[in-house]
Length: 272
Image 1 (cartoon, helix red, strand yellow):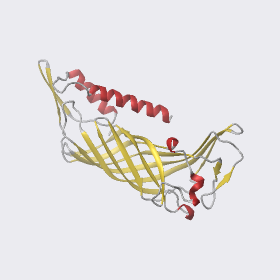
Image 2 (cartoon, rainbow, N blue to C red):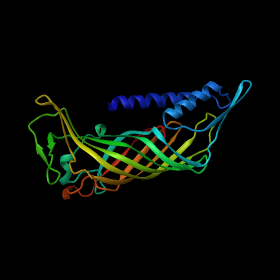
Image 3 (tube, rainbow, N blue to C red):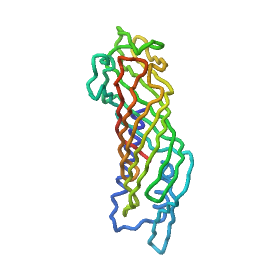
Image 4 (cartoon, rainbow, N blue to C red):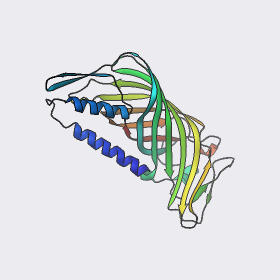
């Protein structure tokens, strides 16, 4: 699923870049403007607009009136890498060596589904949104994280796992401060979004695949922090951008050996 989502984002991003290579002095047809507006609406980037046509030339004017808004959306789609930071270091301490992971297969994925906000003008708005966020840690060692244990613990297994993934899923609730730059000749904007985010734990999961046992899934909270706090930033142009998220809360709670272990994620974002 991760590969499919990544492919979709790359394809959309490539299409957007190709669409932006038209000369600056070229005119936009009414059909092109309508298609662009529909694409923005599908990706949660809807905006009020007026299309003024006079002969062969068409002008597109964004109209952003101040006021409150609420709606269902599918936007701020994040796909990137997750990194564990142990007391400020990218190297895991001896207490956390059992969480040694494959960086290129350790991922973060998330999106927003609902938002409520206030727009001050065409450039600035503030909104709170709700969505989901997953972190998938691809473990290197053949171990099994134990369920219902008093602290985070594991067992060494005499099994060669082709996949050993340790995951968490959260309800994410970010508060976003949004800035949008002036529209350029291609009808696109520079965008900057930043703010705090809280997450409410939904579930933890261990997923393993081996020849001996086939595919197995085990659900538990695994001592993941139930209410995590962090901050994020997104910056980009047009539909595509990059993001980074850092959580001030420890990844795990009620497990003293993992105190100081935190999560940092970064990657591509779409539809913000």
